[in-house]
Amino acid sequence: MAAAPKVLTVNELADYLRVHRSTIYRLLKKGQLPGFKIGSDWRFNVEVIDEWRLKQGAGLLEEAVSEEPAPAAAHAQRR
Image 1 (cartoon, rainbow, N blue to C red):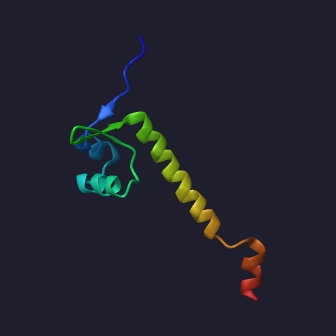
Image 2 (cartoon, helix red, strand yellow):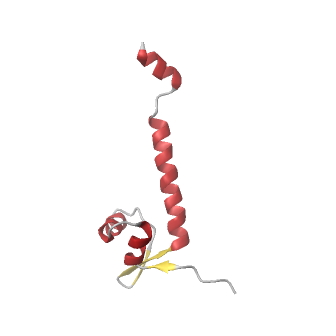
Image 3 (cartoon, one colour):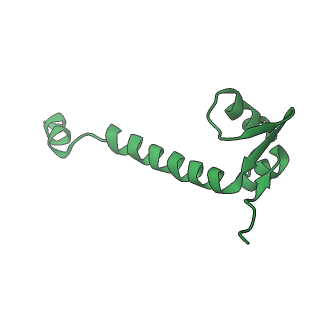
């Protein structure tokens, strides 16, 4: 029998991500955090949150790389 996926509450997710509860609610309001509601309470699947974290890191890395000038352009700017 497969183990059920681990589901976290807002407080547990805040501890897991080491952020304040208000950060969780702000991300939810912006639609930037994957979660689901049970009644009026938010719940979060740990596996989905871990995938989201990896995508967030990859997105930040892609932004940083795209903002770096190309070597030729950097050389031309120095002249």
